[in-house]
Amino acid sequence: MDADNALAALAALAHPTRLATFRLLVRHEPDGLSTGQLVDALELTQSTFSTHLAVLAKARLVVAEKRGRQMIQRANIDVLRALMLFLAKDCCQGRAELCEPLLSELACC
Figure 1 (cartoon, helix red, strand yellow):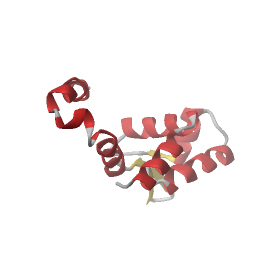
Figure 2 (cartoon, helix red, strand yellow; figure 1 turned 60 degrees about the vertical axis):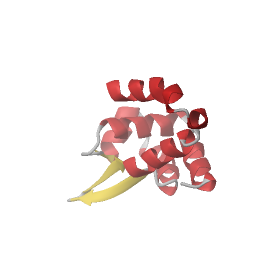
Figure 3 (cartoon, one colour; figure 1 turned 90 degrees about the horizontal axis):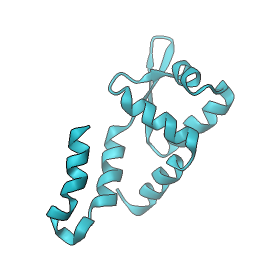
Figure 4 (cartoon, helix red, strand yellow; figure 1 turned 120 degrees about the horizontal axis):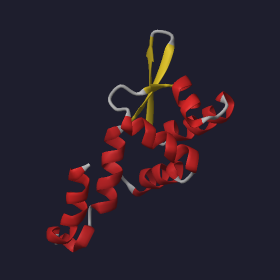
């Protein structure tokens, strides 16, 4: 991931509704949720939500797949992984033991 893509992803997540949407989708991987389920869970109108969804999709954080008559939204875990690696790539100046608490906390969840 380059700096421009990282900035686009971070900007997309820098809104409470979009962050909540993405975190909800991450919790529902690998099945995803229908757009209607997301609208209901977040208590938004369809039109308001579609704007937020478009921002997440443009940043490649969310991908849609058609299942029957429904659009299923899924978190793009590959982009999440790339963003996290981009942010932590130079962590602790190459001293892995300093990053161990972060890795341990991720492993426990």
